Image (cartoon, rainbow, N blue to C red; front, side, top):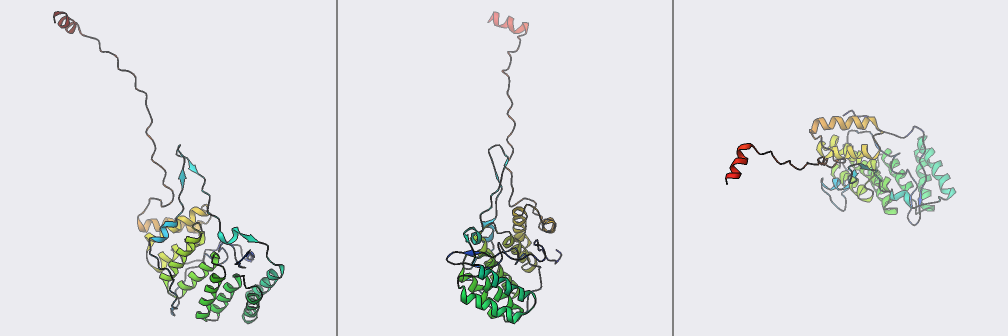
Length: 286
């Protein structure tokens, strides 16, 4: 598989601000701006970041979408589960939006120190926002302060446990740090929260295939991403074709039509056979 970036978002597009009442976050919606991320060589330094709830490789397949069929064997339109991070959204305080955008602009201009101070100020003034903690994690990684980066990502999840972007950011950090099993578990945690999270499926597939050398486990998640995005990413479609060649698994994990019912035929009543003259004579003699 070519090691190239998969980024469906347009260059220069700005993240949407979202506030969830009670425990909220400002950041990207649905993890699109944070991922999918280009596969890359893992960093040499490994950071201890073990999840509280270990999982196994089979766990992720419990969250695959399934194509349903009606009694006539026709496909039923699949309705993805809603994103819990955005489904309960509320109006964002205008000042928070303005300050977040200003801080994000400083970060884009590589004024990292000023950006860090700006995001830290937002966390103090708006403690219910989780998005600024994600940005602080990114800034810590840029400065190679890996322990602080992990703490920031985990703080984002503590502030808002439904921030799917925080799961994605933490999993990518764990993958870059070389902690592949922890990254897998974090992706699975994201799918437990939102089973139809396309970018979690895609990044988990990349992790399994390129980093854990388990293409058979990667294949269903490549297929899930392709299914949930209606095949809109031709690069992922090519990857799916290529991985099927390697695994030899052609049966779909998502879409398995029911067997066709045999056509019913109306059989006519058998006609009585004509009796031969010899048979008639035999009956008369009987």
